[in-house]
Image 1 (cartoon, rainbow, N blue to C red):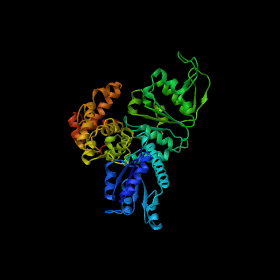
Image 2: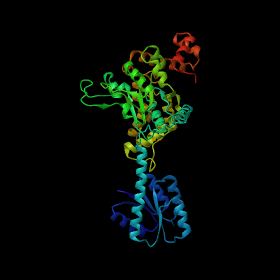
Image 3: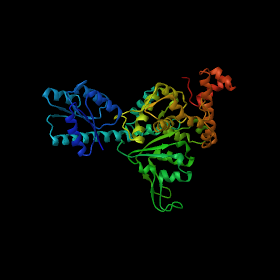
Image 4: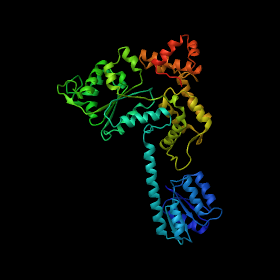
Length: 464
């Protein structure tokens, strides 16, 4: 049921309009002056305002200006017993939907109200579509690293060059891949994402290259692989370092020759696909320890993109935080942040968020914002609310300050990956504790400064 606010100093007009609109099954609230009307807008959601021009305390045109400044999505119908062309033009320029002269026509009132609410509903639907997009769809941030990534995408996307994206889990590597696709001539083709780490090793080749009927037990029909499904578009191979050496060899041939063969088949199939790959692992380590083919790496590593972790771009936390709050306020509570009260972060709440190490990066940050929307008692989020939302995260990473992560995080990794991840985080923590003084940090770790320099190079750690 739509809610309509009537602002008019004449009780008779308010009563007549209220009766007409309630008969049409609208919910109606009234105010006898502009000040009272603006107070009502602060305390409840209103879909349409019917506003008299001549009002005590504050004129109708001034009230219209306030409404359009603070609630631009609300349609306003102006009514006046002394209307003239100049006033009508001014009201329309300020954003009024339309104007009615007194004495009012019942049919015109109903028609204008229906039309105005239809327009408002279309605007609301448009906002809903915008907020319903995946929260990762926008590459938000003003950090210099993101500007560099945007510049790389702008230059590389129009070509067919393979792109190799590196970054920790949760940093948004797939978002970068999608932006490459959207900026390419292949944008109207499919974008096919494959998480190589999530597919069992004995099925990965079938998933990528397809199979013929009877190729193996359970292959009851022919199946097209992802290389074929992505024809004319982009194939995103996420966590590519988790592929077996056998699958890597076949991908190398596919990328070099643009041809594949289905499992159990003899036909060579031409493919037309752009490959974008990503990983959260240190590829030089993977290559040196024989887990990844060097020739495939250099075949894919044409345009490198390194996505920074959230802890290295904390200046983006206020912007990201407001974006996620708006999205989840709409998705979880059904409240349009543009139509009423918006969730906002106090400065001290932002400070708390900046102090957290965010081992799960933007993905973890997004979950905390979701938690804040669900459990906050009001729309202003204080430091205490952030502390409560982060309590579980702090337990998960096993410490309030060091961000080394609990053991559960490492149990899902291979031994070498877990060792590298722990060593990288340990070095980062010691460097931060010693303000990136190499000699002091090396002493604290019990190693030589030259060894620390070597490990920093290995893990891509740079002094800020």
